[in-house]
Image (cartoon, rainbow, N blue to C red; front, side, top):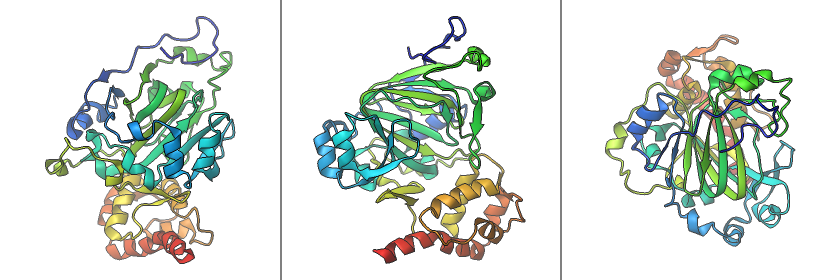
Length: 371
């Protein structure tokens, strides 16, 4: 069983509530949603992605270096939280000897090697935001943190230990939320050397745990606080999707969930090309932008300027002379810092959305012109 904290005063650490429930089969999309997502119930699926082509292809670093060595990726070095850009082949040559780990949106050439479990192959598929890749030589340890979005984390090689805590307990964890992403945040508690005199309430925090082995996946609901440790040569990937109170599963009638689907068969909101995170849809129009704005709402009834700014800044991250976010916000009909309701987005005229789409399409146009 994983330890919640590495160092504690005897008697102050609360005993775990037990392991996270686990199942030997991944359910169909609608049952997964009803049984786990609606009730925000963390769950482990054993052997969920053993059919991924990467299971055999990525078993050795030589294949990764040969096939993907020229890709530009982002690497965290030691305690430095600012990613360093480098060639994947450099990372492969040195990660076993350095305190490095790869954390990256999955580059497009790697997507055909990783599978999308059947619980995400329809219904929730329309809400997919991003796919992330993780790789290290082991011995890594994350902070206590949470995401604004649901995610399914699947392990390809190595071992990972997860600690999961209800978001209701964040006030006991010295937790700071990320501006513009309701539910996302990080604790400033040092999980390697906990000061129990400073964080006395930590002793009353309830928690559950899970250990992933190759082929296993864990579902962690949006806002749930968790901490992760890796052991051995570790490769895993995460599929994130936006929470929504209304999910349409009508497309599941035409979906063949018995057939393996790889990530390359899908179109999440974000993709990764040549070290740049960018929108997958390079030709936004009124309909597709409306959908994107609805995804930014998540389960909220209105879109705030802070949330829109987070989205806008990511889209425009490689463009210096873009329109000010406040001006674009006004174009959408917002008055100063007032929110835009879900109904207003649904009823927004196409002409307005098309004008904003032109702005959001500009980074791709500039990249194309530079080529």
